[in-house]
Length: 248
View 1 (spheres, rainbow, N blue to C red):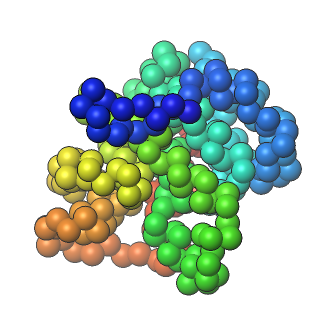
View 2: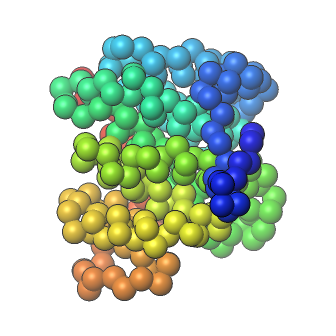
């Protein structure tokens, strides 16, 4: 992967490999999934580009089971996330969801939200309480977390998307990904988007992500009533990723 720099010499986020390269050059069969190896992943990933929105949503749901089962990060999770991020600009991402006038792009972004949250600082802190040294010994999780700047660059163009669902999903993904130290320079800009989520969103998990980001980054937060949370049930789409289930 190329780590390019701007004309001013300031570092920027690494480039995301083209999704075709991720698909063709990943040794899927050597990678762990929740139910074995990743031999079946290429055919599932290809279905994300089919013109049938039902096939696309079903494929996303299958990916959730294969590489995010029980909110875990597997060896296969990283290349799948890069593929999903890589097709955000593909024409197939504009297909309307079945029975909803919402682009599939919103579901792709929400899948990235759920995956990023599973590797977030909050989850790592919790795991460290149970398993001291967790991140040091879990190279799969650590490697995935290093992808956050790459994924951020794929997500950030949609922060001001014209569709509300796409825009909100992109903001939540960006807020979680921006926990990476290399993305600290983006946090003041993202704070504006986080405040918009608090002002306009009716999604409590998303509002919680926005509030926590503002607090962590030292911004003043409106005196809103704290959300009622259960210790292990308070992340984005923690209801079983219902946004990814086929609505049919």
